[in-house]
Length: 83
Image 1 (cartoon, rainbow, N blue to C red):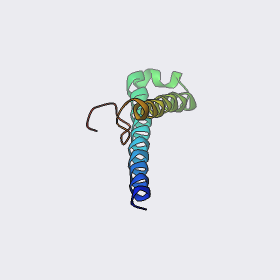
Image 2: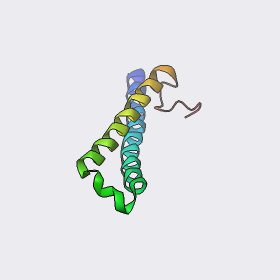
Image 3: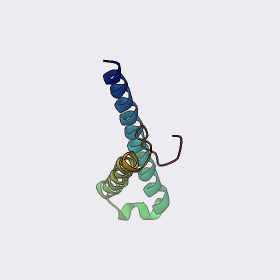
Image 4: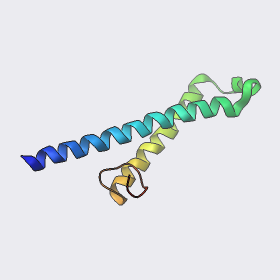
């Protein structure tokens, strides 16, 4: 039973870490699109195109986190050692 509890905690830690990274990537990419386009040019991109761009960045973050689980520490979505 102890191994099952440990496995559950490990999976929960990994899931929280990965979810946090995906959310922050989405928010950061959204802000980056708004800032990078500038006040005059930001109207050339529709709201939904901007959200789609941020969604693509978040999906990339998700894939990176999943790959990190395969190639890095099994308890982290980071490829940085010790995270």
